[in-house]
Picture 1 (cartoon, one colour):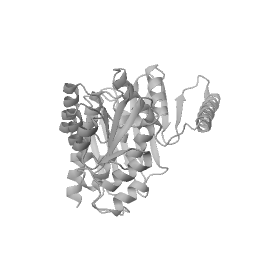
Picture 2 (tube, one colour):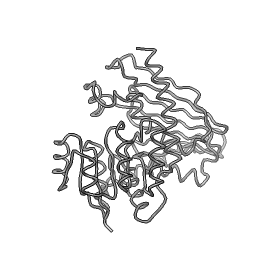
Picture 3 (cartoon, helix red, strand yellow):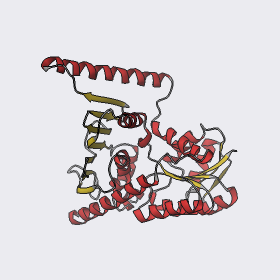
Picture 4 (tube, one colour):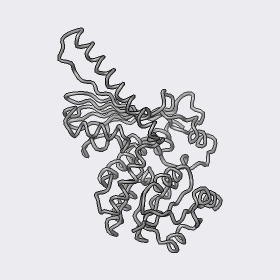
Length: 358
């Protein structure tokens, strides 16, 4: 059976999606849609798609897709997802999943009632090094997690950041939590499987850096959470360098350090050797691990297996497998709802902070 696929929203995210969808057998992208007709037309020409639309409802009626990828701004996610589900489609929604936790719950409830599959574009959730960390934890290599720290150093002068800064009508400015609202999924998706549902958010500090080029843009955030067994720190910064994502997971046996941008994972393990010998053994072990990751990454490079978003292909493939073979969804609904609740809380606090500071 060939799955008929449609994409709504013809920006950069759609480019990433269609590249991965085309790698799968038994899929056919039958149509694309964008509220800007020229965007839809140019996208369809670039990718050899016969049909394009600027009316989403018309596309659903005429093309009857099996799967819809929603790569539009998040303000439209809930409505487009509900329309797709009502038409009997499985749905892949880019992050942020929805503007509020209630909207996220409505989308999931509708999908479950209709027997449709639904997932979110958490690409870092399935990065190779994140999957490696998951395996180490599952096999007891770090013991019990006791502390987790994630940090995102963001480039405001990058392609997307500049677009946001230069256009005050950009959809990011219309989000309740602005730039932070659009990026926190990248961080929360990396902690959600380790943090208990009853965890308490202790503090949320958000502010505008002194040298920020846009007065209304909160571009720094520090957050802490606590449960009975785990403490969590989350950081977002437009000033920190080098750019990228880092994760540190501290356990009762060892500690894991991830650099997602460079696709490296290093594990801190205590040596049984005494004094200076132990410190030397530790350094040798670190060097050995770094060399191993270097060889692994060089091998991937030679095999042309180093895409910009290495987790996206795994996520899309897993989602389509869940449709074709009735496998479990790649991301549990409880994780999506938990992150949506955290986002609600953080965004409300950020909005209060911004109201006071402006």
